[in-house]
Length: 327
Ligand SMILES: Nc1ncnc2c1ncn2[C@@H]1O[C@H](COP(=O)(O)OP(=O)(O)OP(=O)(O)O)[C@@H](O)[C@H]1O
Ligand SMILES: [Mg+2]
Image (cartoon, rainbow, N blue to C red; front, side, top):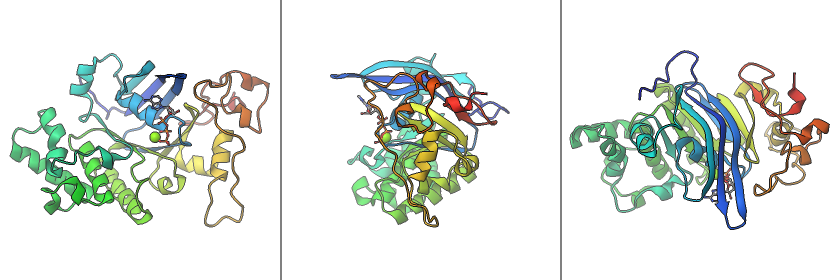
C-alpha cells in the first residue's frame, strides 16, 4: 500500500466518526465517541482533556493497539488519505505500525524491556520490519536516532535501569522514531518527570519536529508545558473531541464553553484573575448523558443541547461540537 502524506491538501492523519468502547463487569465504557480529527503534515496537535476523558484510548484507536475487551471499534482512520480500517491486523502490523505511525506510550519508561540493552531495543522495529539489511546497518540508524533524541552514544550498550527517567523517556522516543514514521503519538511523554527534564524533552521534540517534519500528536493534561509546542489543539471531553483549532486562535479565543472554562481553570503567572474551577464532574462514561455531554455543567446550555451537536466549523480549520456555533 502506498501511503503518501505529502500530497497537497491531504491531511497527514484523519479520523472520521471514530469509536472505541470497552466491555467491563459494570457495562460498556464509551472511551472514544464519534471523533473527527484532522492533522496537517508536519504540525503538532496537542490533545488536552481531564484524566479519564479518553485521550489514551484515542491514541489506541488511531494505532489499533487494542486490549481484548473491546466492545465497539469503528469509524475511519486515514493516513495520508489511505483508509486503514480496511487493513487486516497482519497488514496493519507489517505496513503501518512503527514505519508509518508509532506510539510513545503513557509511562513509556515502564515499557522498556529491563533485560535488553538499549541499542538492541531501539533497533527492534528495524529487524521486525526488515528495514536494516545488517546489524551494522541497524546500528548506524540507531546511532542517528540516539543523536536526534539527545542520548550520548556511549549509552548504547547500557540497560534501561542504568538510565535516568528522562533518558528512558528519550529511549522510548528514539524507538518510536527509528523506523521513520510520518505520524508519532506521544502519550503524556513527560508527566512523570521533573520540570527541568520536562522542558529539556519538550525542546528536543521541538528540534525533531523542525528537523524531520514529523506530524506529532502530543497527549497531555498540562496546558502550560504543551502550549509552546502546539500548532493545533484538540480538546477532549467525556470521550468526545469537542474542539479543534489552531493553537494561536485557541489560546486567544477558545470557542467551546468547556474550553473556555478549562483555560480559566489554569493558574497563570501574569494574570491577576484567580483560576476558576469547573463546577460539577464529568459524566460517567458507562452511562453518558444523551445530548451534549457538557450540558449538565454548561452555563450556556439551552433547549438544543438535549441533542448531540455535530462538529461545526465557525472558522476555517476549526471544529467545535456545540450548538452555539450552528450557522
Ligand atoms: N482496557 C480498558 N478496559 C476498560 N476500560 C478502560 C480501558 N482502558 C481505558 N478504560 C476506561 O476508558 C476511559 C478513558 O480512559 P483513557 O485511559 O483513555 O483516559 P485518559 O484521558 O488517557 O486519562 P489519563 O489522563 O488519566 O491518562 C476511562 O473511563 C477508563 O477507565
Ligand atoms: Mg491517558
